Image (cartoon, rainbow, N blue to C red):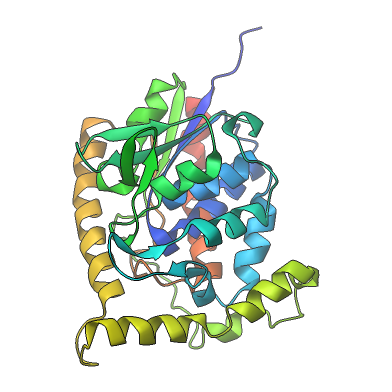
Length: 312
């Protein structure tokens, strides 16, 4: 009997849009599509690593239970030198809350993470060693997060050079590569809820809040977003009518990544391209979690016939 074809999953960058990866993976599992390898860029690495730890459901419950905007407040605010934010401590909390895994060797399936060498501009693929160091590197958005030094190189966000890492998935010799692109600009047919906060369970309504650790984390960061905004305003002495630094940086990166993605996908097309309709979301819109997950789920369901045909 011939062995089945192997599947590589390339999960693209996209900050808050990244929760669409949760829905995409859920749809693949529901249809019994195997996932043998995961390659991620930026937030795609974070979701992919937790999936490979067997912790996807824990992540989903967590982001649905949080007021989505608080997710961003989990990163340390530091004086702006190489970056405004130093996310090491909070990223460790956001990852370790869902899993005890620390090294790539502990993952259930092979995972690779794409980062960018700040000195050369070349793509760097991380696939061994400490998971948190790799995550910090692949998720270090220039200007917002401080670069990370890994094996003598200063690394930043992988989305700068490879927003949807199809090539790295091909290198794993997967028979079928499925790519999830979050930067296509496609917009959902659904309207977001009028009050996004009301769409989330209140504190105490979700099983996730039974965790004493989570309660402490939520309480600690209750006012972090306001404090963060005030601190940035004070540092920049800006007028309220001026676009804030977060939107300016993230929108600029989004424009760049959308164009790089088009070029890269034309040169190295995947076997199946999933493009969830999340174009209405800004890169830091962490308050539409439920709809974002659903768009990823629907995106895969729309292509499931193509996927199954390739696996025959």
